[in-house]
Length: 246
Image 1 (cartoon, rainbow, N blue to C red):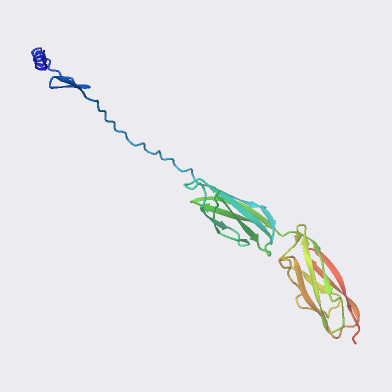
Image 2: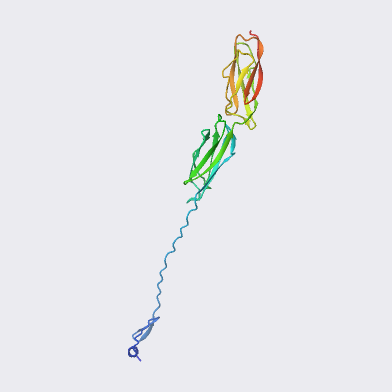
């Protein structure tokens, strides 16, 4: 039977069905034809992962200081696109007695930031609130301060022996439990009412020291003059010898 006869036979049965698979008939001969399969692959879509919410922390160490002292203000920023690294942090505070070394900071690779806050030497007592803000998120910490009690006052004169109509330097230190106290007022007096101080109420410097001059009048007799320094309820005295003129 030829291929034409086969097709006629199928037509007679009303079943014209030709199936092309892996072989084709050409001129009555069977020829192998490779099957071709086309596959379309859709690219995988990257899944979007939302950033963690921004979190800000801040603290003071120590949280309580004496006036004239400093404390470290530090904190951390986490979350966000960079997970806290390289973020801007703005610091604000509520008390004019407190000064921040820096008010705008940038976090390090770990999201950390740090600066110092100093309480004025002239402040008495109080509590300051310090707020750190980054990415619209804020956190606050409190710093309490008070004037540290004076535990000791010292005084000395140099030279300790002078003639009338001359001067001597009066100096000393005011200290508390933590060490020398800056910004403390010292009241000076002498047993000779004719002695003149350049400053009767000097204020200690950043190292807790004070200094002024005392002038011995020309009319002062030969004598021993007692000088007294008082501050914070504590006092100390020293003696100056006024020698005979000539």
